[in-house]
Amino acid sequence: MYFLSAVDRSRPNGRADELIGFVTARIVMTKDSEIADLLGYDSSKGDQTLVYILTLGVVDAYRNHGIATSLIHEVIKYASSIPVCRAVYLHVISYNNPAIHLYKKMSFKCVRRLHGFYLINGQHYDSYLFVYYGNGGRSPCSPLVLVTFFITCMKTGLKSVAAKVRKNEEKMVKWPKCKETRGLVPLD
Image (cartoon, rainbow, N blue to C red):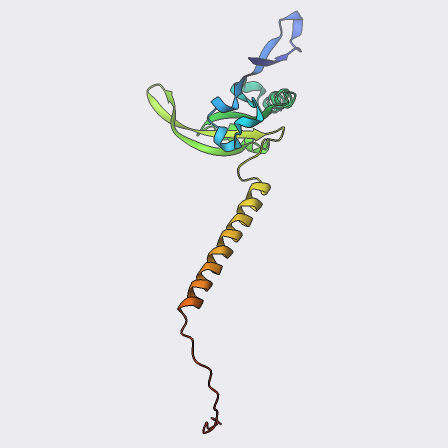
């Protein structure tokens, strides 16, 4: 388990430090995660891991001061220090627009919407799944994957066209060559 807190140490009159933000995370084996398919998990590459952010919170009075950004940067730094870690991921409730904006600004990719993921006071809420790729992990829609997909489609398409042309050539009626051209009148 990974835990990091932010405290306000500027409290007057020797009062105790105040907790103003925190993040908790844990290491998850890629093969056991819900995003293994998004990473193109390959069991032959050994035990790849991920870091899952469980909670992130900042006291209202301290929001919009970069505290959440700093905490997330520390989680990313921690994940980057683990050579087999391919990504950091998290869930966010669909109506938390400030958090969604923050994750997008920090280069997290929204990869899924999970319907009814949260149950709060008897009501279901959707969740977005965000992923930050690192240490060689990449989105299935990375430029390399898109180029590979495009080339594969082109090869398949060309093979298909070539097969159709061959079929059509076999079906074509072969006209005998005409040796005699006498008696033909030009159309002028």
